[in-house]
View 1 (cartoon, rainbow, N blue to C red):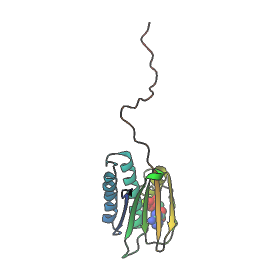
View 2: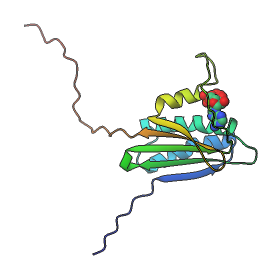
View 3: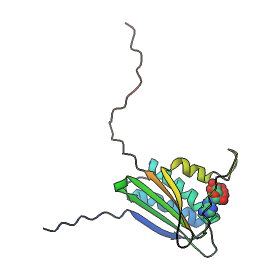
View 4: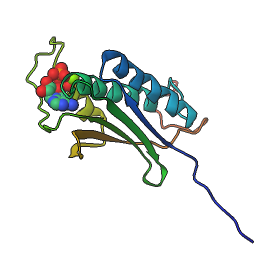
Amino acid sequence: MNVEISTPTTELVQRLSATPRGARLARRLTGAALATWGYPHEGDLSHTAQLIVAELAANAVTHGRVPGRDFELRLGLLREKNTLRIEVSDARGDRKLRFLDGRPEDEHGRGLVVVQVLASLWGVSERDVGKTVWVELSLSPRQRPGTPRPCPRRPGPAG
Ligand SMILES: Nc1ncnc2c1ncn2[C@@H]1O[C@H](COP(=O)(O)OP(=O)(O)O)[C@@H](O)[C@H]1O
Ligand SMILES: [Mg+2]
């Protein structure tokens, strides 16, 4: 008997225009793809992934933009590694991403700090044209309803 076991598709690859609209679309596609894969819009994973994609896409369309070239969003759910991998590729070859010394009230210079705080792993890799900024997020085990949690002891009634 021949039994075929197929892995469900858990990858999204999308080229987008290197514009603010393209960056917004990248974020929305991320929420939609994750919802299809069982991670709802309101959940922690989706929030985190959308925030990371928003920052990386904003960087791709400002700092990584080459006129006339798109950027690319790639999402992969690596179940065997219990990981969501996010990749945002742009056409600009220089790989020097730098952390800016910003004051807390500054509007700029926080994107990579946010990415670093949220990511389990992240980095930049070369490609034939341009570069890829990638992030891996661990998928935490979903909490089962009704799982008892330890709670702090309260003093009992006197007597
Ligand atoms: N995709 C990119 N291509 C080239 N340089 C980048 C890219 N992403 C980030 N950088 C560099 O890293 C710096 C820090 O990025 P970030 O923390 O997002 O701050 P901001 O985008 O507000 O400048 C940017 O100012 C830029 O010099
Ligand atoms: Mg930025």
